[in-house]
Length: 220
Image (cartoon, rainbow, N blue to C red; front, side, top):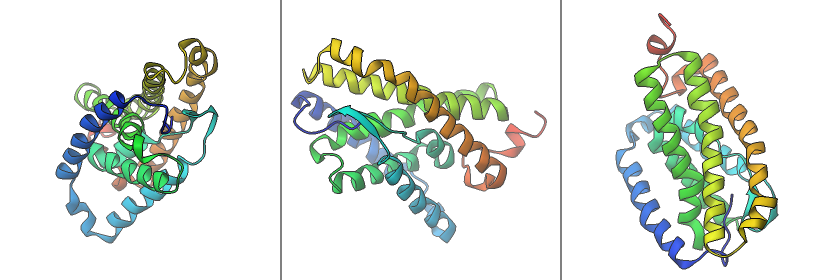
């Protein structure tokens, strides 16, 4: 969901600024920048930024603010952990905003809904899996597939709540023309994250920062 300018109440915009930018600053502060000392790390990070930029441009919608597109938060969070995942998605958001696909006025709100919230949800699921059920299949299904599907559902519902709270659309309009389609985007989001996560674990496990063979495969 890309929230455009002119539809959102000022209160929501200020609240998003107060929430999003401190979280982003924390991510920048805590990110393991030493991983970018290698050329492979630099290429991986830049490639992910470009990938998400184009992924977010493949979208469909019925009205301003009521758009659907994959997020890719599950894959990024499992690959880079939450800090770099949030930074990458913020860079992609800035790129799309600079190209005129989104508005600077709602930059923090879009970042909060499409980046910070999904990343936090998926990382919290990962922490629970890592602590209580460190198993390869649980890792892929719970963290990547379910985490991706659930995070885009929550993001879509929050976006709809913001539009409703800003009197941009009535609840009846959202319930008829937007909310029924949210479950339909959950499946491709989960499958997208799950399949790419499985492929990377198989062929490039060193790219998955949150995955360790000795914990999730050996002895399981």
